[in-house]
Length: 413
Image (tube, rainbow, N blue to C red):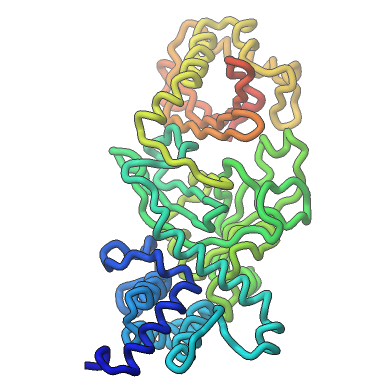
């Protein structure tokens, strides 16, 4: 009966205007379509905190004020450090009596003092709603994941433009999107090039460790996992800096603004804990892109063929023991842990003596593609010579020049 009362109808009308301020008018009106994309933690009713906030938005867009207010009140009670939820709750209360013209519609003096924080919360709200509308097409994965070894259990891709981290599980039928989370990046954006530039690097990385929370400052929240920035390509390009981590937030802060870090990738504490439980240190690739491109398996297979042909030709040249032919696959500026191609050649020659006339199998092969000003590929495999049970575990970085792929780094990992 409440929704039929004149006051309630007016409140619902005011709420529709408020919903527009949070990006909710375009929000799916069907609850089934508005399911939050994550499967993370901080749950009190089987939903993540983000899912509960988005449900508040859906109710706002439907003009259901009482339900929206009730859910918002429960959310801020359960997760009091969720600043965006607190703002929504405050606006919902204010909307009962007046029309709100902006998010956080407070007296001018207060609005001026908190203008920067309000702008950040507005951007955060827009990014979270965008995640609902910009779901990856069914059956697609980021274009960087050309091939993953069955031994690679999980993979991560980050879309910096959408403030979204996607977690995949590697299954016999291919990569499956398991969960995705809101993530914050550098204050100055992306494309890190030097120490202290407050930018998040773009590229193909790996999680190198899971830091012990006993030695972490509260600033890093519930956990931290460093990435191998600068990677081989970054070093080749003269990039500097380090300490790029996936980490959580201080106890008093549920999440950070979309662009608010010194270069790290920051998630809420429930989300970083969910990642830590699932990923494998040293084996989980992390692709950080300004904007992910999603492709179906047939497209990826077509895209991968030229490189696969080059890798196979390199393998056959090694089997034949042809040093000159093998060296032709390496760039003139090749480097391996400080060794030039000339200094590394004895290593290649030694391997050829052991492999000549024997079949070489590339086991547990992973191919990760990266394209910006140049087209590069990171491949990891076990190089096993016929008759042996184990072999060298290698990682190579290839670059495409004209139509040819060549190796600019090779090393044992």
